[in-house]
Image (cartoon, rainbow, N blue to C red; front, top):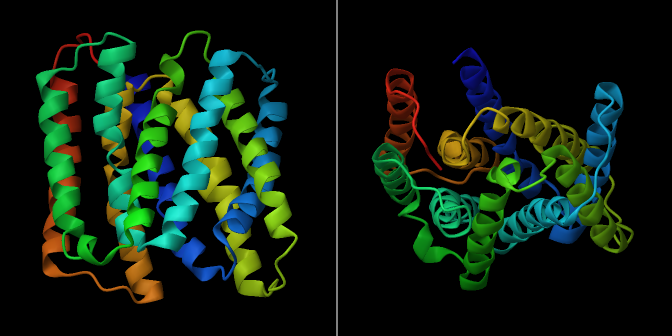
Length: 282
């Protein structure tokens, strides 16, 4: 139980770090592919340093490659979505990940979700929809579709530990490498290397991608994928709040109600988990 609580805390902290992405991306006046390439170059150094310190051998297999595709897809699609639509739209549509986790777990892994998982998943999604209901109508349609695609790939990130012969941290490393290589040609075309964009890029790479993924991989060792995706419900709350505070995007009263629903659901979920006998879950 102590290991499970520690894992849940690491997943939660990873989600908090992920939440700074919207603000930092908005502060960088570059193309989405340039931003993603630059931040992943930094992330490769962070994750690579972690592999060296822990003496973790870098692995490659078809399942590691599939995980890397999920990581890279999430990196690229979420960055694109933040440039094509509002930060609120990008994060709420990405947070369809818990639904995709449940569906993929049932279809691919033949895991039966608990009633608690389904109930809280519905509550969290309702809260997220409520949080962003006021802004969904003004978002760019293509940007919203891209954000929805990031939700599917993000579900794969939560399932890295469920894949046969999986090695999540290797998937993260190769996914970051691929993202960096793809974005490099775009980065070379940028000219605005002033302190704000460069600092924001370093924060994105070191913390929002590198350290966050390390924490997520460690947390997933003892945290079920559905539980992890639900714990990450703090991200769609903090992300637009930070953008609103520092980038002046407004948050309405209905959005604040959604925030209470999301956070409250996660707290209740974890309290109930500590009181419920361990059973098969997704």
